[in-house]
Length: 273
Image 1 (cartoon, one colour):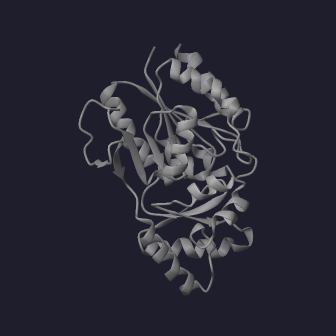
Image 2 (cartoon, rainbow, N blue to C red):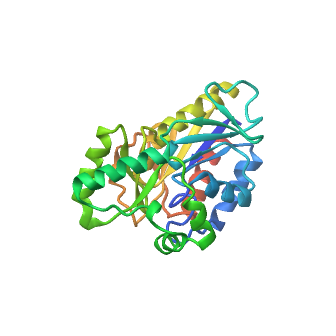
């Protein structure tokens, strides 16, 4: 069977956008494991959050955190030197592509003063408020607040103009504003596509001519979907997916997550089995 690598967003793609349920995706995940296909989780979530789900899913593959800010590679994943990576304890090699959160918070503070607008982000919320706004259990809300490279900001339709002004302010400091499924994210020059390309090159070095599959549902998944051979858009009625219409060669699942995840994986595996 031709070698595959699957890069998947989490919220709204692997996990239900509102309930975070994922049981319907388990058959597809098991099918990937049975065929030796890596499942690389690529998310706006923190390392702590993704490690939580990797433990539940028995996933041991590399993963990408906070919108491409860092690539975590379990030691032993590749039988060669990963250039540019640093060691993190005994478990990971890390490729850092993003900006430290402290610098981002400082820039947000300056933008807030300049614009006369207070932007509500995770840094100003406690675990309980994050839980209320996300629908996460309190423990997972705590993991969601353990951010290292970006700052989620509450999306409010009435503040659309303010967010465009914030985007301009951040750009002057070499930072960006991107939109996920629930929040806007202030971050550095990183994106999911750059991180996926870094990992894709490593897998292609390991398995020449392997094909890459990408699954996503929101605007911040656009760079990832453009960086893979087979891009799959998972429907999400709670977000604006218009930005994804330009993805070339895209396929679309019929169902929302997690059923749409299984649908997409089944479709791809049926072509290569």
